[in-house]
Image (cartoon, rainbow, N blue to C red; front, top):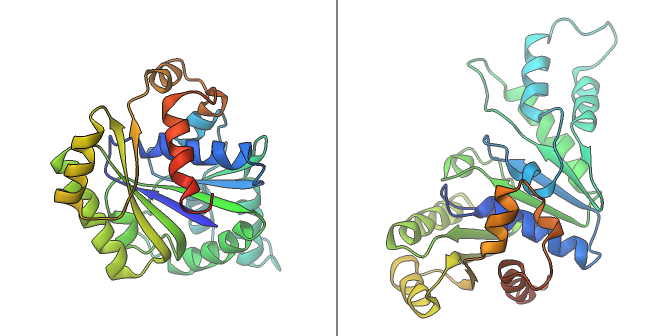
Length: 248
């Protein structure tokens, strides 16, 4: 299953993406490929694993030296080798960091080959969890390809929920989701109001409300992996219950 997590900045989407990886590992639904598609590249820190090479770095290097490859070495082979080197191996999961955006040149051929190799890489994992960049830019560039499940994350505010609605509408317009699209409201303290606001301002299918969790905040402040959170922690427990509804 390919799961994409989207939402505007500050909603906690990266933490939720990491908690989805945690659930997959706990359920032995592994190996899992975690894809950090946010230029801020913070998914690795949530998972306690850092990638030494990003896809963006590798793409830039291939583009700058596109005429310097050894004779007889196809560009496809160089990119495939680069993708393999960009995979950081964890315990039950691997991490790929997309990194920075493109430079001023034309990257069309490089990007097309990258998509091919990343798609092939993804096929070797039981689940792929993608932490998308904040907002809607990744959708307008169609970098997601097709996903089985998209979770749009919002805080419990009218502004955040309206933004979630726009992200969902763009995803539907671009047809990037072949499965279901759900709303998750994060950092909730008043559940009744959050559910009412979700209906009034987003109008999306609500998968669940995730409570404000001081333990998650403590882990983030201490730069500890959310994979080590205890099962009784409020946020992962609520997310686990919500994911049961989508067969996870």
